[in-house]
Length: 138
Image 1 (cartoon, rainbow, N blue to C red):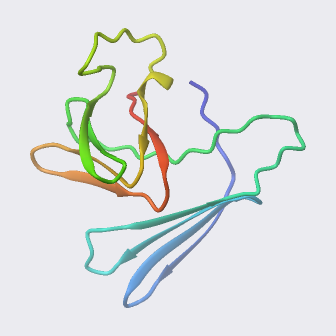
Image 2: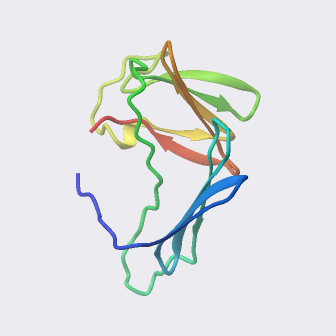
C-alpha cells in the first residue's frame, strides 16, 4: 500500500464552548474538526472540490478512521436508513466468500450511519450524505 504524505496548513481554536481545528491539505481539500466542551462527540466536516482533472490523473478521496476497538472484524451499517445490517470483514453471511481483493472486496454502502464496537466502547459515524466505507486492517 502506498501512503501519501502531504504538507498542510492548520489552524486550531479554543473557546469556552468549542475546540476546533481547520486543516487545509491543498486548494481543493480541507477538513474541520469540532469538539464541544464536555462532549463525547466530534463533528468532522470535510470539503472536497472541485477536484482537478487537468493532470489527467484519477483520484480517490478518502477519510480514514483508525481505532483499537476489538470488534472481531464485525461492524454495522444501515440499509437505506431503515434497519441495521451486521457485517464482517472478509466474510459474507449468505455465501462462501473467497478474498481476492481485500480492499475493494470490503467496500459497502452507508446511507446514514455505521458503527464498530467492543464490550467497552463504540465508534459511530453519522454521515451527512450517502457514502461508502471500507473495512480493512493494515
